Length: 163
Image (cartoon, rainbow, N blue to C red):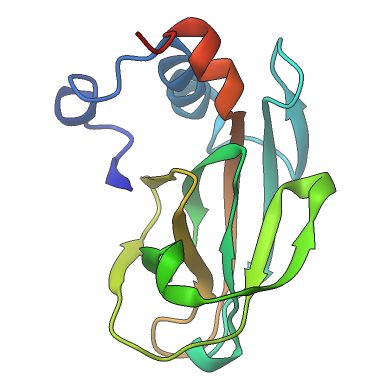
């Protein structure tokens, strides 16, 4: 997991040098705040941006998820949310798998986790195995608008093959 502000590239560029990651973050810089709700395709299969909104809710109503074949870059356009993060091994068995979105769902669990706060202009990157529980309200539930860049893991491996 990596968390930073989009308009602080001096902080994140030294760590995020993969061209696919960089192109995704550049898209966010140039389009993220103005993007309408919808899907925006990149030039490779499975690599896209999903701009959407929802209302945050109490932590106990939020569900854990993990992606086995895709990386998420989540960027907050408007609103605020807390996201719990933990390793997938701590969550036990998958209760639902949606292959079309590469999403594993897990039973709600209450144990200590890493928590991040996404405010407008912040982004977080979740790798496979980094389970996350988004949609958590900070204070009272509220509406938000965010985008998620989905990057197939295989696409990164084609750019930077494992030695």
